[in-house]
Image 1 (cartoon, rainbow, N blue to C red):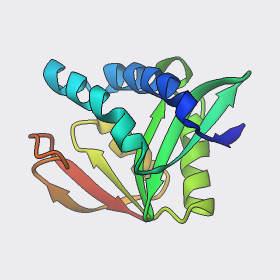
Image 2: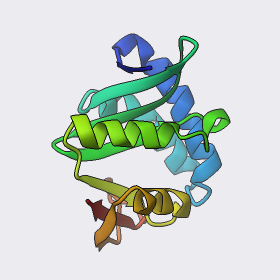
Image 3: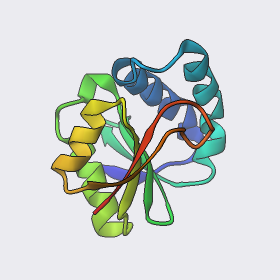
Image 4: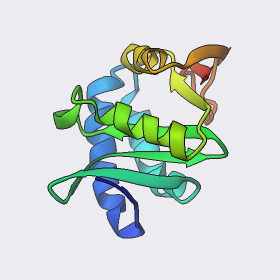
Length: 140
């Protein structure tokens, strides 16, 4: 069910990201949505990527670097089915994840991370790209 991601999977990861973000990041400006989407392959190359499949189709993925959960996205059609929890638990238990940064405006994600044991440690006014999307730095 959980497997490593290859470069040949990147196109599917972008589709998953687009489905997830368009349904959860309503605060994101259109031009920023396009900017981040274009940057995804660069981001993918800097993290360990794992995905979860349903009948041989990737439906969610995560990216981890240095104990930080850098990305966790589930295709919108599969949200609410425990897949995010499966991936996050795997990251915590097998990849030694102890931190995650999350958009403060993404209240569903903040609630999800709190539910699985993370707590807010700090806050930044700007995201990692210097854009005006406040980030909550969370840890276990």
